Image 1 (cartoon, rainbow, N blue to C red):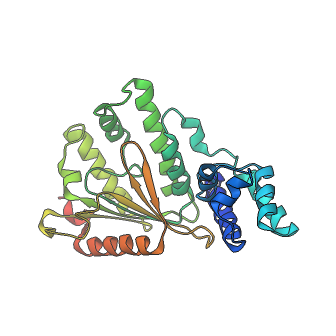
Image 2 (cartoon, rainbow, N blue to C red):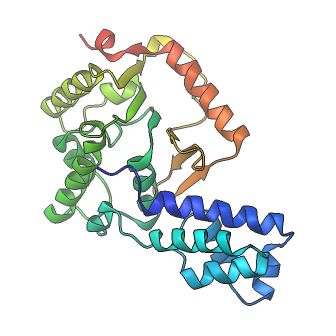
Image 3 (tube, rainbow, N blue to C red):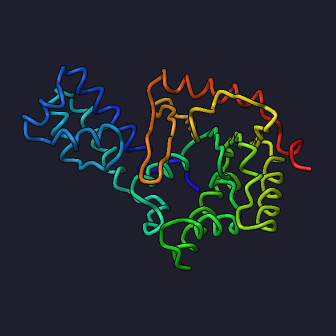
Length: 276
């Protein structure tokens, strides 16, 4: 699985365009007044959430007073924002807001995951995926279920096939393993998968036991921290809801979530010690 693609290019280009705008002393209103882009579209471009046309990049660079080499370089990046990621083949299974996360996940060098409720998609077995989807309120047709299974299996190649490997650290709430998703056999298979994955050098799976008592993540809910090797692509915290997601990038937000993850790691035990 590639560790680059349109998602990263969009984020990098958006960040550079925002820095150019701010250096030029231009506001979002100035861009709109110049009739180049709406403020909504400019926000989506600068936050890396959409592709951008080469003509729009050149127009923005003109407004910001960028020199020719800078303009040409950013215009070249714009071409890469329209490339399709592999997840585009799963449009029916991937909401637009989740497609951005998959692109980030595919490009990350390290992921830290906390989930008190369910096994993360990177670690789920097909039977566990099926049980989750069939219990949901969405389309439960065989086609829809199989689409979800195929999507997760494709995502999981990042922890098996990538060179260098994706580093993954996971803390699961004890309730994740106590809840019988799909029945005893499905859960036994899922726990076996977790133990098997945790033996890999680049994967660490821990359980926050009931005996751990109060802990730092009790008020946060599930979250994922994604880090990237490229310094132009800063870390992000991903928070998911049923109908959308939030992406936190401010240093103070990242610091808080890193601190929380470190604190619960200290209280959690390796899954091999927790599972009989």
